[in-house]
Image (tube, rainbow, N blue to C red; front, top):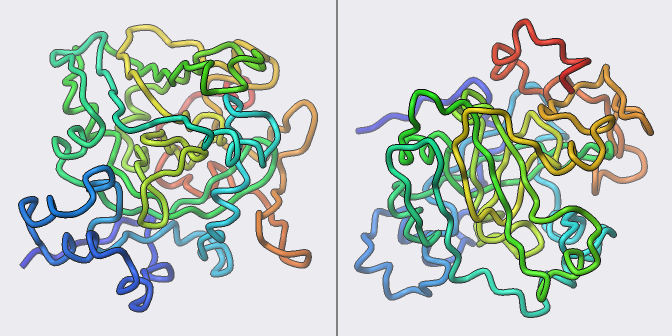
Length: 322
């Protein structure tokens, strides 16, 4: 019998309730019981691998109980930054669902790797070995936050699949470019395609995650379908959506917001309440869906994941390297 040892960033407060578990789609229930791919193949192919497998892990225990409850799905799917589909928070839910197709979707691994390859996302998930659920806090640089149950897999598994060469020190992520479907790209509200980067040791950290779903369902278009980055100790703009290429490089890649406004958005984007954005304070955050009386709280260093990631930045001045 395999006994799972909880990670130190997990807590029992957020285990999926029995009623929620039994309410999950049939395809998830069958997979949790160990039904093989042959039986699962009778289910809808497009979302076969995009929902939660097994019992979910639990979020960071450093937060008060009120912060562990996932934000309501209506907020997570209806209040988004996805400039490709507009700059207002409500724009992506409307604009990203006007015929934009994310199935099929190909993601490419390239650069300084021993195993360059292109995968359909569903085939990649098979290759990786399936998915899991992790509940992470999400902190936006605009000083608001959510708690989101993500479905996906550890970024470290993708790194291992690519097998980077010794000279590879960084990962460069590039999102899609489709101005016919993306109104923001037609308007040129940013330089596209959107680009983001991580150090390879950041990518290998146990918290770094590639999400393919939320709430036990495939990622909606407005949330970065079909695959996006989740680095919960960093501000939200670091969490690039709808990834098409992951390139391994020897030099630090420029990320989109650093190119657009280097004085406001650095490469690291680590949550640091002691370093304000030039136009607003980062010392506290507004909890989306938290209500009038409980809607704000102090911001924690590294979004509360200091124990898991602080060692990555020993000797680095986090005021200069923001």
